[in-house]
Structures are given as structure tokens and as C-alpha cells.
Image 1 (cartoon, rainbow, N blue to C red):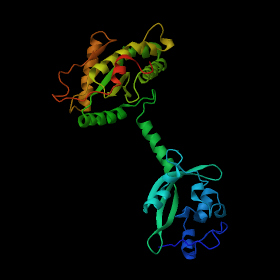
Image 2 (cartoon, rainbow, N blue to C red):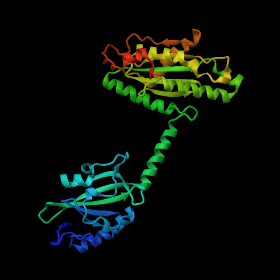
Image 3 (tube, rainbow, N blue to C red):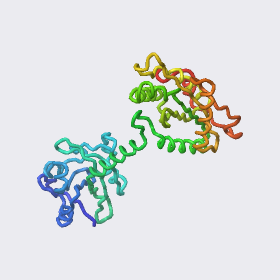
Image 4 (tube, rainbow, N blue to C red):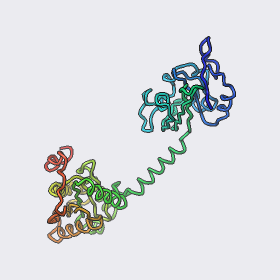
Length: 345
């Protein structure tokens, strides 16, 4: 339906809900909408504001009609909570580009409450086909946003270890598969460190599972604190943990593992004194085309060698040519810092 926005000779009367619009039947149809809707002309004036919009925002029509839409009281933000500039609002894009634009936003009601909404903006053309304005219809997305939050929390819970807060085996498997695919596509190295707390069964047997759990949580905190933001630290199961280092060659991963080994005693709970925690580490670099199970088996074999050699040590799997004769790309500049210093040093 084509709608012509025609201004009256005396200007726009803000007290009139339809402002300068004379297509009464068209606006009665819009009044019947249960979704909030309003119309802005090419000059940026709000010329229509339906009853649903008044209920949704708390602002009656007489407070907004005839006023520039850029002076809106609704405080639009994007889905991340960042205030939208006037030019970023989808209605402005519709006026500028002459096409429908949809976007998730949040709207500030009169009482200060913020409501997530989907803004659906459609161009309205006059009888000559020129854009006369934009019709904005808002869809309350409160339920959808709540569902998305619940799904995010469920995904987080499904991929988190409840004791340590680290990623669990499920998350590790997913990220490891993804990382190995990226390695094939981009030609960058990836390494994996498998760590196991030494003689941990004796901790549970001698001090109880409560103290054992504290030791596991403290060791996890140490691993997390000593790792880069892009590394994935996961609890592999029991007293075994994994650190996945993307874009790290084997020599860097070996140095990281040695740093973790040296820091392990600091994770000892006070109740264990005079005993000190120690851990053994197996370090491997992913070979080109290697699967996650194959990589983990090699890491486990390196860890076994570390334990067989006396524990509290790092064993590196020195594959002859993990890249099968293909050249790998050099790592990023931060490798130099990673070779020498722990995070925050």
C-alpha cells in the first residue's frame, strides 16, 4: 500500500496522533496492529505513533508526534548494549538506501526499563515511487532474549567442569577438532600439553576428597593464570588437564610446560603441608592431517614417559616431521615474549 505523507499548511500539529497524514483508513489498519509501530518522514519527523507503541514505550503519541525522530527518548542500543548513533539506526538506513532493514535493538521505556526488540523497518513510497518515509515495527524480543540467555547458560554448563570452571572434555573435543581444521587451512602450528598431578590418589586417600578437590581447583587456577587468553585450558578427567596452544610451535609449548611444572607447588592447599603438589607433562605438536584422538594418544604417551622417568618433569614428543615436508607459517611476534616470560610478567 502506497502512503503519501502530506504536510498541512499550518505545520504539523503535535497533538494530532496522525500529524500531517490524511490516509485515515491506512492508519486505522496500523492501529489494529498488536505490534508497536511508528512512521517517520524523509525530513525525520515522527508523524505516526500507534497505541501499541504508546503502551510499549510508555510515551503517548502527543509527546512524540511532529518531533524529530533523532531526538527520540527511546535511547536505542544495539544487542550488545552500545548506544546507536542516529545514522546506525535501521530506520535511517531504510530512508538512505530505500530498502527494508531489520536489526535487534533494545528500547528504553519511560520508566527506565530496557526491552530487547527486533526493529523491522520498511520504506513507504509515494505515488511517484519515491521514498516518503519509513514505517518502523517493533517486535518485543523479551522472551527470545531470555531463551537465548538460557541457551547460552546451558551451553556453558554443558561445556564447563563444575569443580574447576575450566572447559570440560566435551568442549575440548569440539575446540580441538576446530583447531586442527584451522591448522590445515592456514598452515599454523598448534600444540597440546597434557598434565597429570603426581600420585594424586594418595592425596584423596590421605587427606580426603574435600582437600583433593581444593587441590584440583587450585591447580586449575594456576594453569588458567599462566596461560594466554587464546589458549584453551580444560579438565581432561580426574587429575588430568589439557592446555591447547594455538599458533604455538613445539619449542614454545615445551617452555610453557616447564613454566607450569615449576609453578605447580604454588597450587598446594595449606592442608597438605608439608607435602607439595607436583605434576608431569606431555607436550606434542599437531601433525598435518592428524586427528584429535591421534594427537591425544601421542600426548598421553609423552606423559607416560614423563611419569616413568620419575615424575615432576616435562616430556616432549619430538616427531621427526609433524608437517610432512610442508612448510609451516611462522608464529606471531608474541612468541618471543611467550618463550621467556609468564603472562603479566
